[in-house]
Amino acid sequence: MAIARKRGYSAHATILGKFLSAGCLGVFLGLFVTFVVVERGKGFGAIAAGPWTGWPRSGTSDTDPYTRAILAYSGEMSLSESEGMSFVAHGDSNGAEFDPACDYALKGEIPSARYWTLTLLSPAGAPIGNTAGRPGFTSSEVLRASDGQFEITLSRHARPGNWLPIGDTSKFILVLRLYDSALDAPATALDAANMPVLVRSRCE
Amino acid sequence: MIQIDRLLAALLWLLGVLAIAGITHIVAVFALPEIVAKDTFARISELAKPGRLTILPPPRPDKQVMPFADPAMVQSVCPFDLSQGSLRLHADIEVGRLLTFSFRTSAGQVFYSMTDLAAQQGKIDAIVLTAAQLEIVEAEDDEDDPSQDLRLVAPEPQGFVIVSALALYPGDRADAEERIKSVVCAVEQVAQD
Image (cartoon, rainbow over all chains, first blue to last red; front, side, top):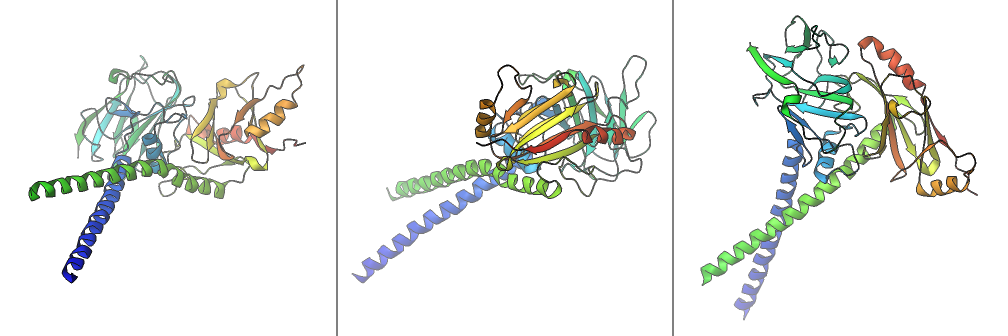
């Protein structure tokens, strides 16, 4: 009788243990997946064009929950649809992550917009200090060739022409913002050919 | 037989784990913006008083009010709390200079936005209201002389407006700040009788 009761208790304890372990592991797994998704920073609405990623609907009220969570996590006040669009590049056109020890050339088309700005930031979204005091370029600042083409050189060391200093950092990203752009339509299918390419040249 | 039982029990346990993980994930994704919203709004309220347009300091490597901000943009913020009255926004637009307006909830979600291109006769006149305030204002409308205001109903009583001006050259910053300072953002009482 006593043995049977004891067995009953231990059976209850095992079941309780199973529930508890399933609960804890489930909560942990759920939070972990959420963290990974948010940290990776890719919602369903993202569109990619070459090295650039953009969120056409990020500023609108019908943003998907993932994009909303990602933006909330990063603290970014994303541009609204009528203000323009922003694109982020974490690496060059070959898919390799940016290396501050290398030089990069940005050239090619920029989608039509009233103004654009190109900014070099840390992955967390902070500006990176540099001795030249230049955080980026605007569409008016950039020096162009007679045919309107231009090239921006990213480097740690002073370069002739449009030099965007990388500064003292181990990681950086590029943000391209198009203000009052013709890309406002949410259904925009972006073509990599219409976005500037990022080519790595020499490294230290 | 016992082995199959064990296998089934383990499978059931695994399903339980996955179900709980799924629920936690969904709840976390939806809860995150709400949690962060309080933080964002608190940070903004610290810098700016409701019904007042305050220019934010330019982002620096060690300190930014909003991460990923464009250093070429002079940003200002005007928080509002509609329980204190509606919010009026007026701007005289200088042609050809980028000025953007985004009306956001406390979580930073945009409910309306425009640029200087939306100006009519060189002016932007907007009023942010609750649904109840809109009813009062509409009841007072003069049919012969309709108001030119852009009336925006905010989804929640608290939020903020971000007004930004682009400085195309570093030397244009002071000029961009002047353009923002000319924008009026003020609390307006809606007659409640």
